[in-house]
Amino acid sequence: MGKGYLSLGSNLGDRMRNLSEAIAGLKGRGVEVIAVSDAFETRAAEVSDDQGPYLNAALEIRSDLAPVRVLEVCRQVEDALGRQRPYPHAPRTIDIDILLLEGGEVKSGELTIPHPRLEQRAFVIHPLAQIAPELILPSGRSIMEVKNALGDDEIIEICPMSR
Image 1 (cartoon, rainbow, N blue to C red):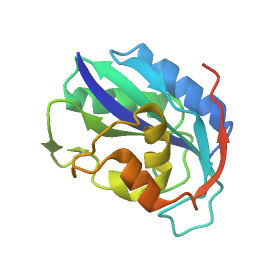
Image 2 (tube, rainbow, N blue to C red; image 1 turned 30 degrees about the horizontal axis):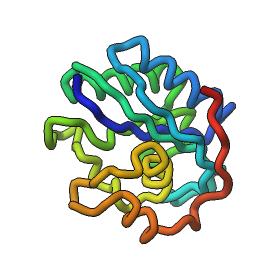
Image 3 (tube, helix red, strand yellow; image 1 turned 90 degrees about the horizontal axis):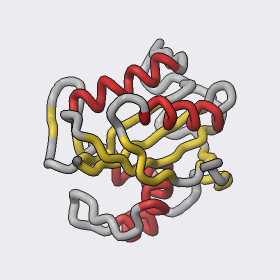
Image 4 (spheres, rainbow, N blue to C red; image 1 turned 135 degrees about the vertical axis):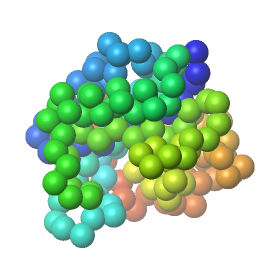
């Protein structure tokens, strides 16, 4: 089974419930969830409109599924939780991004692994660092080095996830 990391985010509805239901939905579809970070409440980033804050979390997973199949599972879970895509970076009930998967890189029209903006997003790096503090990122930098360089200006509060 290959190890990987996912990022989850929600800024619509019951955000904590959306995260919990997404985790439960992944488990039933060929994805084993090994570790779950706390939920990090963050200001909306990379958006042009006024959006409410997100709850973001990171997961360590194991799966025998091919990367494109993991993406399909993530989209099935997003759809089941009412994810709408009216425009890029729209508010969402749930967003699930594949950050890293063992087995190297993937570059296609619909999927790029490692995630191309992984090291630029504090809302991804902080939760990921919590569950994988020894992780060396594809750039060769440690996750803690990247976390410290990004700072925590986006982070409003850290909310324990019910496990």
